[in-house]
Image (tube, rainbow, N blue to C red; front, side, top):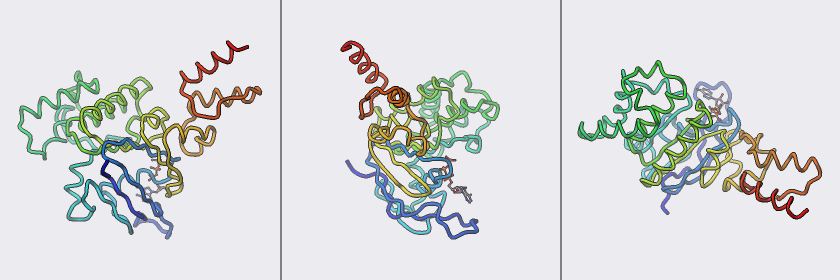
Length: 280
Ligand SMILES: Nc1ncnc2c1ncn2[C@@H]1O[C@H](COP(=O)(O)OP(=O)(O)OP(=O)(O)O)[C@@H](O)[C@H]1O
């Protein structure tokens, strides 16, 4: 698989800072086309800063970012932005349209797509995030979760090569979050979409092929979700909520039960418990 994102020795400092300390220090990683990578880390560790460097919203002090074969620079930034769809935690500042439909359509406007196709894509995208009924509403009057769905619909319609989700499901309830994750899985199945999701949500991290852990502006660990989840209680320090099977294991351990050391899903834990009971 070819690398669609390549970050080499990235250092970043906010110009308005009054110290010399870097917000991102020597960050290097690659993402293969079609891969889903989750970035986790506690609040303030630099995840959003990293996302904003990737599409040139912020310019690094040093280091190099290559997106889809193009080195990010003043000359390539607009090309690169067309390839990346970003959905932020608070989509308020992303809305530009007078209605929900206008807003979703706006993401397509610079792509020279015929009006007919555009309207069809807007309808399809709104249906996918369950927001068709809100088509003529004013975006500003929607709830936080509804705004996140509309922002996501814009990205579905625009069909970027790379989708960056910066805590984009944080305002949704568990059911809404599961629906959005299913939509992203579908988008990946339909195209060669690459997903980078910044999240505190364990299910979102579990959906990824790989998890990168950021701490204090540095990449401190990477692994499959199963490898990362084996850290148990240390996950909380990494900015993730501990998954239910791990909480259950910790509770059983406190009762003196010898538990499996590898990560198990809820179903895996249920099977293991069933065996344990059956053998008694
Ligand atoms: N515009 C800014 N000017 C100066 N410092 C900033 C600015 N934006 C963020 N920072 C600082 O940079 C550091 C990293 O912030 P960032 O938002 O990237 O973290 P994060 O991991 O995304 O956190 P969260 O999970 O809360 O979104 C923090 O210490 C933050 O205070």
